[in-house]
Amino acid sequence: MTGSPFTILLGGALTRTERLASQLSGSRFIAADGGMRHAKALGIVPELWVGDFDSTDDALLAAFAAVPRESYPAAKSATDGEIGVEAALARGATSLIFVGALGGTRSDHAFLHLLRAVAIAEEGLPVLMTSGEEEAYPLLEGSEEIDLPKGSLFSILGLSALSGLSIENARYPLDDFALPFGSSRTISNVAEGPVRFSLKSGRAVIVARPYDLSGA
Image (tube, rainbow, N blue to C red; front, side):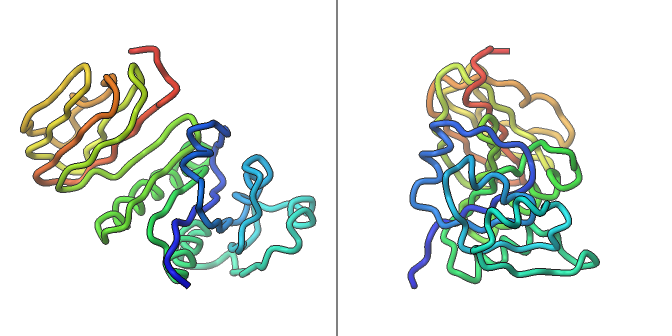
């Protein structure tokens, strides 16, 4: 079987939007524990359901009883989401989308998802994290363009000191900028349309709000 894009359903917040539906087109799906609750809203049936199922109630188990499951003990060395990622990689994932990876009741899981996404991107696999209303993209050495609506908000969170950071087609452009670790300089920018990013060294995450046109 040839490689495919994969989406991992996680337990965080999710709003179904037209943009999200377009991003998920052609994807295969794996649910991680309670992330299965998003399947109905998205109108899909995952090919696999993994986890310790401590966040899954009987009604959800009954609704998706036909989906193959891989059960793990609660005392394990990886999160349900990470198990889902490894299952997707084993099936030849060519890119990953983490749905329900942002927000929710467990900020430790959300932070871990951000770090895991960056680690996966360092291995050469495209990664998107989304709640439907908010998106996050790893930013590493090199260049990339993100198609954002004109007027929408985005920020760059440096996970290290950044050098050679450039931002084009934004209200506050930068050219070959050195961003100290922990600086707020790159918070709350505004897209003028598709935004182009380039970075010479460092690790960062772009957090975008494509439906937030407040311009703050």
